[in-house]
Length: 316
Image 1: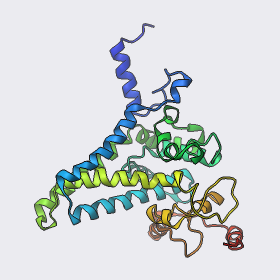
Image 2: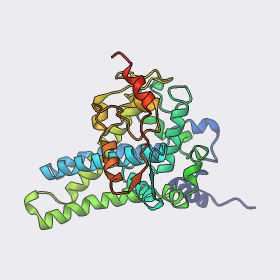
Image 3: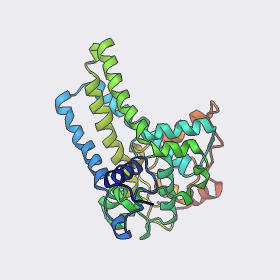
Image 4: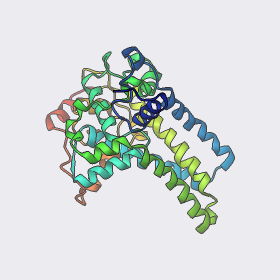
């Protein structure tokens, strides 16, 4: 069979890269896979630069509230859906809502649910070992963000998510996870334009909400999420003697809606609740509990009494 022309090869590889196909880097040598995907890193840096748009659009109370609301809403999509459902199946839901949860999670700009869950499950298998792609032992920046852009971490680890890969709608969503993210950006702009037209006293417009909701909110969301990898394995308190370095942190729990109770989570990952005790604030669990009252989600997995008793017996 004749080889494809050079331009056709480039187009094919770009398409495979764009739709997150497992063959996107199949032409590379193992040594090349250790390197950073400069295009993805460039897009990430561009988002940080995009925040400079606030000097053009200015600031308004509406824009700040909108950015904060989108931060916490999408943080819930990551913590409640990507993490507690897709990664750990800590509750049940319908197939339709499962897909909607995946779409909602994509608006956070952290790739699709299959990629996210496969890498997180691998993290639990190899926590803080040399095989853990984001262990802090490799350095703060590596664990915080740089690991994401390594070509060797591009693919979905399908062997870790066979339960999810059987759903064709999730596989398709994974291919085009950037579509809901871009639609979210349009939503920010459209909301601003509607407010500008119908509620001018709010002193905002489409461009301003686009900058604050799509760039500012998303960058803060990135770093808020990443703190669990880079900081929650370094700083905090250890209630349980787990085989990793996970720790509990109230501060991280507040900015991640409950994920900061990371030592608890590593002790019993399948629990829907990560703040094991009443004084450990876990807003993601509260939101999922609220959804359960309407039958949208069900079978929220509790923390076993034996583990709660184990934790109470620890002197702090």
